[in-house]
Image 1: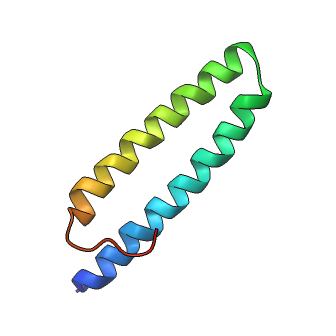
Image 2 (image 1 turned 90 degrees about the vertical axis):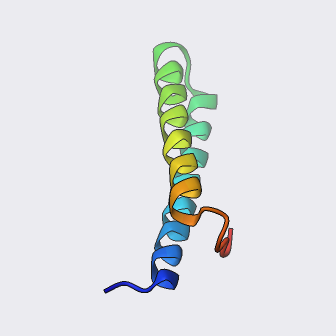
Length: 67
């Protein structure tokens, strides 16, 4: 069985990885044009929704570890 701390650490690590993905997507959106830039924007929006869900439901204000 996973401890609460382990779950919080996993959620925090997931958020960190998602933020890295967003940074990469933003870079490519800024150097792309047209359809690709719009698709990258949609991907960024989708990842932001997942980030918010993890932040609210997994960490829920109890244990904000490293950013």
